[in-house]
Length: 386
Image 1 (cartoon, rainbow, N blue to C red):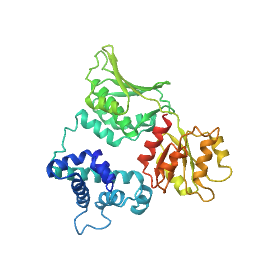
Image 2 (image 1 turned 45 degrees about the horizontal axis):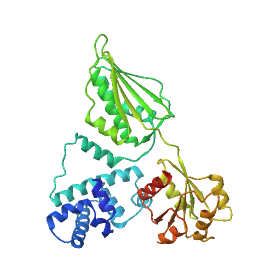
Image 3 (image 1 turned 135 degrees about the vertical axis):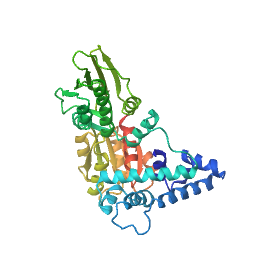
Image 4 (image 1 turned 180 degrees about the vertical axis):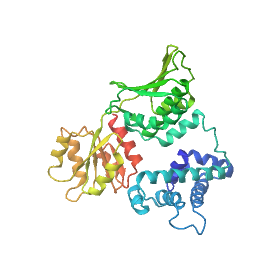
C-alpha cells in the first residue's frame, strides 16, 4: 500500500510517476512508451479512486462515503488535512483511519488491474515489516503509557492461562523514539509470548533507562517447582523490533526466562523558528511538527525579529518570503551575514518558486507552499542531522 499511496500522492507529477515502481507493472502489460504509460497510470489511479464511490442511492451521511471522500479530496483535489477535517467533520485520527481504509481498497483494485496478486502470508516477517513501515510515525513515546495499554490487551490471555502479572514501578518520564502504535504492539507481542511460556506461573515487567537506551524487561516464571518454557522469539517480534530500531535479546536460568526490548532513547526536541506573519500558517506547521521531536516558535517580522532569533538559538529557521512589512529576501541576507545566525540552517518556505535565488543568498533548502507534512519533516530531519 505504501507504493500506491506514494503514487496517488504524486498524481499530477508526470516526471515522478514515470520513475515510479508501480508503473513497471503497468508498462509490463501495456508495452507502450513512457509518456503513454504515465497517462494510462494516472487514468488507472483516477478510475480506481472512482471505484471507491458507494453505489447509487447510498445516503449522503452513510459512513461508506468516508474513504472515497477522504481519498478524493486529499489526493485528487489536493486538500490539506486541517481543511479536510473541518469539511468532513472528522477528527485527525478518524480521518487517518478512513484514509488507510481507502488506500487499502485502492491498492487491491490497482493490483488486480495490473494482474499481480497482492496477497502474502500476513504473519510473514516481510508482511510485518511492510505494515510497520506503513504505520510508522517516529516521535517521542512514553513507555509507561504504552506498557499500561499493552497490559490491558494481554490480561484476558493471562486470566485464561492462570498467569499473574506483576510490575515494578514504571517511571512515567522514560521516553523512547518510535511509533506509539508499533511500540505498543511490540510490547504486547513480548508479553503474550512470556504469558504462554508460564501457564499457572507469573510474568513480571520492569522499565529502566540510560543515556543509550530505554529497556522493557519481561520475565516469565513457571509454576512453582516447574521450569518456564522457552518458545523461540517470533518473526513478528523480530520484525517489529527492527522497524523501531530496537534490540531484543533473552536469557534464562531454567526456572525463569527474560526477554529484554531495548529501545533507542528519545532525542531532545529541536527548536524550529518560523519567521511568518500569518498565525494560521504557524499553527498549521505546529500541528505538522507536533509529536515529531520539534518545538515550533513563531517569530513575526519586524525590527526585533533578529533579536528574538538570537535569543531563541534555534536548530533551524523557516522563513516566509511574502512578509507584510519586510522583504523576505532581505531577511534571508541578514540571517546569512549575522555572526550568531549565519550557521543556523535556513529553509525558505514560500508560494514563490525561486529556489535558485534562495540558494544564491545562502538558503539551505527551499519548500514551496502548500507544504506537505512529510516533505517538511524530511527536510528538517536532513538539516538538523548535519
